[in-house]
Image 1 (cartoon, one colour):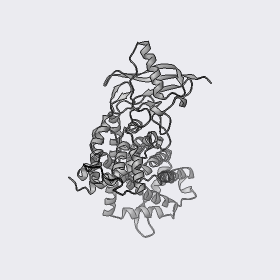
Image 2 (cartoon, rainbow over the protein chains, first blue to last red):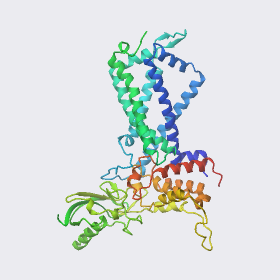
Image 3 (cartoon, rainbow over the protein chains, first blue to last red):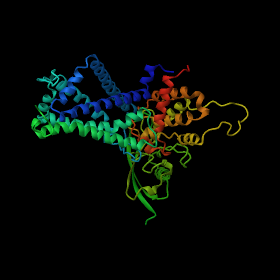
Image 4 (spheres, rainbow over the protein chains, first blue to last red):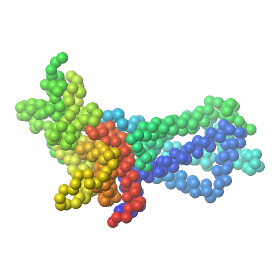
Length: 235
Length: 255
């Protein structure tokens, strides 16, 4: 029998690893979106949520490390699968077309490497903009001083490049999840003939909800004029 | 309606392994709608032989009744052609129309090297089977029938997976050239039955390892393999293979 690390390196192990990290990242983005939507809540809701996260201390570092490992492993395995496929078929077809039916060949599934790499590059810019971006300090109702991430978010998305760039990337995220959600659960062996079609539909709906949820914020801020926007309370 | 019609063929010609190949144009005007695809190629070969200018086109076949897994061909970009759950030999020319252009290519994968024209070497599948696609049996007199009780639903599902004829269309259609559906079907068939239980863990790991050693790619859950499979085998087989592999490697005690 192979050792645990040998098993992880096998074709099955790599796929299970992609699925496990994929599900981890899915859970992460659900929390991320829930936090983002606080911007439509009470004046301080978003900054309070962000401050609560930043005040978690060592636990936050553990979570961040776990998240970083999940992202990097997911990307590493995905890129290696794409690399292997080039080796596995050195000479391609002159003509190739999907047979449809039970096939899940689609722009979403065929573009996982493209949407994935865009998301990876986006992540670097995104972390630089928000996690390490310069902000003013605000006083929260509890008397604590916190970074004004809400202000940073509003000023960032009033710039067309950010507003539309984020929107485009979130559409790609939707496509990535459109194949990824179903694929992750299939990789984790949760595939049953009876529920497969339902699972795929749930995945596509989930992907659309996430994409729309995330891209709504930059577009609303841009077109709503930031603090002038009806749903956003500033001060 | 005319009895015969004309098709334009673009057929991959390649003199031998590691030689450059190319698509060659042929026009065949004596096509009958009742011909199978292979019979159409037979007629073309008769013309080529009669003309005597070049060698006939090499292609694989054996039973011509859809059960041996010998015929292959990628027809207009689809393994075994446009008809669902049909082998190339059972695809009839009535599925094409007068004046159609049909592109015919061999199955393409590093693990399936071209021998000549449309014939590829699929012995990689044999080696995957050798790695564990068998069960131990008691030698001596034949056992009584039904001496091992098996739930009917289990037997039926095992049989569904056992219908895999090892043609390799799953590999040909997979964008990654993965052999996961073939290997998964063999494992889902044998691992499910009491006769296959003794070697279950070892079989799963050996066959998965062999699949990778042969140079097949990873599975990305495209499910294109299921769409082209002439026996309609579900990719649930692949999920089962993963489940068995995880169980075998996390809780494997055998040497």
